[in-house]
Length: 369
Image (cartoon, rainbow, N blue to C red; front, side, top):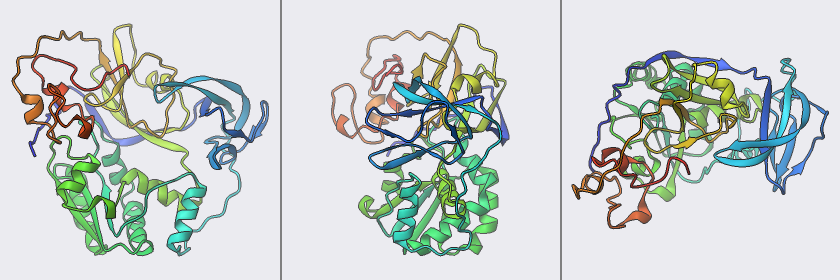
């Protein structure tokens, strides 16, 4: 497979710590029209209260406070109805059970995760844990590994036992220096976990690419990332659903890039205003400069599908005619050719062809979609 090294040369300083922004004034939790609401306007909810269920799948409140009604929000680039909750900043928790020393069976684990709306595919006897951030300039998975190393390793080890895993791999970048050293020092305590150091080429962190490079049978492989492991840890040790999300916020308009831990349902506007002074000439790109999409509305909210937010200068790039250089096809990780449509059904939307095109043609995807 062709290898493309994308140098991270932008003038961005990155903090190595995770900054917590867990006290927004309001959160906005989107719901579908067929959802069964469990709450009413002006009702008080505790953190962990079920707000609604959709096909019996529950969604929980990430804060305690008063339901002030419903409104429209931009959620994953779609306009949706949402429940608005005003934060009382008291973090009153719905009393839940804790299972710090419980030994789960596979069926009990799957039921517990499903109850907390954590629906992972846990079928297979090979387990891959990805600690490699998907795009250049994203650092959330690396920071999670660094800041929660012991919890991550303990939970992986527990999953190996519960799921009867025959082979387990933890993948990190070979130039992720801090984590390489830490994990090499600790991995001997976890003989069932095999540490794999992966070359820092894009898109080596893609699920299909990792499984292919490991020469594994996809149907018999369980694939999770370290944030999934963090969520599973909270589920089996604290009986908690997902309340928070780790987000990389960076870009050439920021003095410092950061990894943030924020409440689900927080407005992106509230996060951006804590990090930069914006003028009219900027772009907000979600989930990567290569494969992400642009949003025009700062009132968009943080969802579990958001990995990163890029705040970038409004640099207009002119497209030119195709010169048939073939770089898009030569370097495609799935051997597709955007010029002819060959193998496009296998496209993984990595955006590498757009990045490499000397004519700056938008070959795959649209930043405004």
